[in-house]
Image 1: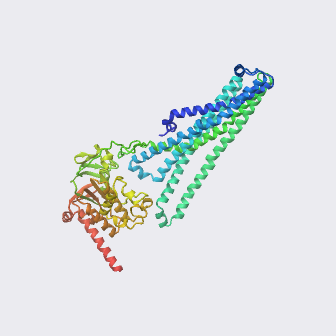
Image 2: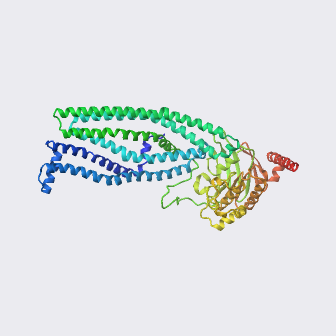
Amino acid sequence: MATFRDIIKYYQAYLPLSIFTIGASSALELTDLIVPYAIGQILNVLSERSTDWPMEKLIEAIANLTGLPNNQLLSLSVPLGLIFLVSITKGPTLAWLGHWYHWFVPLKARRDHFQKAVQKILTLPLEFYDENNPGRIANRISKGVLNHTWTYPEIAGILIPKLVRVFGIFIVIFLIESPIALLFLGSFIFILTFTIKSLQHIAKMEIAFDQYEENTESHNSEIITNIKTVKAFATETQELQRQTTRIDRALKVIIGRIHKSYVWLSMYQTSIVEFCLFFILGLTLFTTLSGEISLGYFVTIYTLASMAYAEITPISQLTEEFVRRYASMIRFHEFMQLPIGSDAANLTEVTAKSTESTNINHYKFTGKLEFENLSFGYNPNKPVLKDINLLIKPCKTIALVGKSGSGKSTLVKLIFRYFSPNQGKILIDGEDINSLNITGYRRRLAIVHQEVDIFNGTLLSNLTYGNPEATFEQVKEACKIAKADEFIQQMPQGYYTVVGERGMRLSGGQRQRIGIARALLVDPDILIFDEATSSLDYESERAIQLAMQDIFGTRTTIIIAHRLSTVREADKIVVLDQGRIVEVGSHEELLGQEGIYHRLHSLQETVKHHVGLDLRSSK
């Protein structure tokens, strides 16, 4: 659970610099107190009253140093000179000690924490992304970091120095007239306590509202992602009504509860401040009339008190801004505290000199895989795979077939170490894969999914994603094997054609062939096709099958397929049913057994026969 302490720790790397700059800004705020003090001393001189001891000693020292006569003119010139000195030097000093560093720190921290957020994204378990869409995740990170960035200059550069100034005012008034100072301090503490208590209540509403807004923005992201489905089912009106209802609810909450609470707080603050300031004025006037303090001190006390009470409004506004941002900052830290997944790669801090750890083990395997008594379930009480024992020899092609839910894709996830087995182990070349460096191990694997992920960039950048060091000749050779060179040559800029977000400018078959070429470019020891042809038309499927046949025998290949036409050429076909291996053999051997594989094959042949009859009759 994230707390206020986590917000403070956000800037921990810059703590010494922060302390120095906050201290410097606070000191500059205290120099402002010299002005009303000096004006009070000038009034004392004009009313033929003596200056106080510090000012008197300063005037004497200047008279002795310069040889000037210690008269009224010098007594007026010294405080006037102090006012001039403060006014002239504060501007440029504050600009660099204050404004420069109060933005330097949050901007550097912004860079650091965005990097850490990306690292967190890359190390979270896969199930997190099954429950949270990209819009929700990106929004939480961007809002959290952005609000941290805007908050630091306000807190470090304005709020804390202003509080120090108020404390300094109390000290000055206390030295002049302690009873008035204690009354002033008491009133100020009362106002701040009342403000903080009220803001704590508002903060709870802000946190709830922030979660509600996050859900609304998350659904906006879903609408954008699934816009084709929305338009295809003509549900634009439905989606607009749903989001309008949520937006209207949000408006009622933010106006009727949150904003109204801020207005009430402002009204109470203003009323209390005006009453306290008037009370201080009356008390100071009475003390002056009774002869306890001079006219100059009267002006000094009232001016300082006015300055202090005037800080209530900006302090309150800054505190309100902090409360408004508090929810998103806390939710950012909650995200950063999520436990990393068991499948997380060994990422290192990115530096200007090195973008990657140099300690990654570089493995090379024959491709021999063994599954020993392997059992696994996402819920341990409901196993998906049960007692799997299987040997895959190097450079052989193995096909995994079975009904949906039989455990085929889960087995592949275990090979990639997305999850760890509940029982048993997976060996590669005789070594338990869990004992290997996960990054080095995964770099010897490659997979072509049913839906190939394409990044918004050029074809070349997508092809070399897994191996940026690949030469252009290697890229062309991989594309030739994957039968991708045929359509790439017809693209406007060839390999430098920009393919758009998620590769929307490519057909399904083209994306699959890009996926195969990309996998080949990393030269994997084990290559996996996970339903690589299930959503393609016959022509595209045939092109992919030809590309796959060129790969068979060059490395260990695992094929997951519903269409049995894709697995005919496999050296061994493994049939899974309810998480168990029930049949193993070649295509011909399994047809002869007349088991599950035979039934699946007969069913698909029947479907193909009927589809063929329908096509001929339609002609």
